[in-house]
Amino acid sequence: MNQEKSAKKTTIYDLAELAGTSASAVSAVLNGTWKKRRISAKLAERITTLAVCKSAQSMKHVCHGMVCCQGGFEWSQA
Image (cartoon, rainbow, N blue to C red; front, side, top):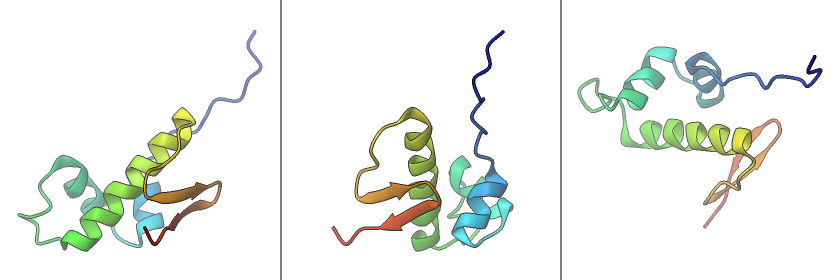
């Protein structure tokens, strides 16, 4: 039996909480319909960056343009 901890998958609810927005907004951004929903480009970028960061953390890669950390993320001034 494998006793390793299984990594918790990141949900749209997790991303919404980190981005300070709704799960509906996260869904629209990830599905590419954010412009039709009048979601700002700034928020869409923040959600997309968070999604990439969380994905990279699970694959143990380094996030480009930001510093990923256990508790979330920090924007770099690059």
